[in-house]
Length: 338
Image (cartoon, rainbow, N blue to C red; front, side, top):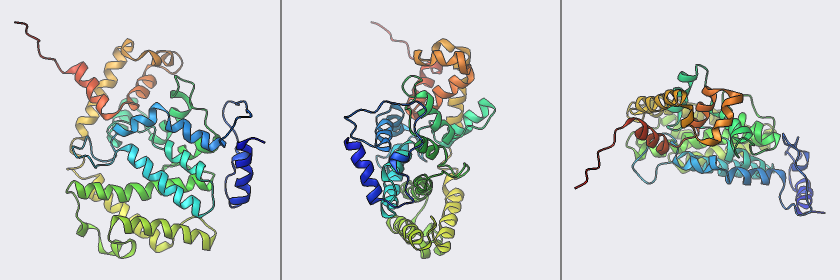
């Protein structure tokens, strides 16, 4: 018996009957041989594949809310991803579900985010003429774009959890995937408040009293309330969710954040410039396909120029997009020799 098989047996002894068991996975797009040296379950393997991918590393230089913030302590898309993973693991463990599955989904859920956050989604939607959805792009990243077109060959449950993490998408089939979907909302609402206060856009007193009375006054209190209520509500009711009062307060807080932060002209004042950068890069590469990196060239043949350029730009970090824009469109100074 391999270590992997021992771990799979332990899951059946330790986890709830509602958990997604590793040995019950619906498998990968391409079958992979088993070896006697297997020491990880399929979901552990998926977590590692995502964590070691180039797309995951690029998250550290992608916008969460504030474009290219000067301070050291603002969140990036990577820190957001790690925070989602921790919240999801806490809830999943308490409910005796599969932590490895929830972690893998959380690690992969935002891999498809564009440079400059949602401003990048708007820019690529406009140039492509069809909606650019980051959850669908995240699935493209793990299925097609990573490893020079081979993809990461992740399990069905992780792939569908990544696709289903967005509020506008179909609910994931596994409870672990549904927990990541809610954890994403818990994380971005509360942690974005923290960044907005750091930026001087919000103060503690700005949070509506009716919300603070239910969820708590501080960042720590709000997250603790949401996480613990979800755990105890689910255990007592048998249905994944929160008490109505808590759920309504969370929705009210989300609406408040959209009004005061996500659509705030101070926080979003540079987004028109960011959209222009990406749109001009898109038009440039359409006209100059040879300027695309070598590993994107084969994709042009079977997916077309526009889709290939879109994938290339969507994968850029904020810094790299600005660097390429400067390189292509900003004249450099003459180097005068004495």
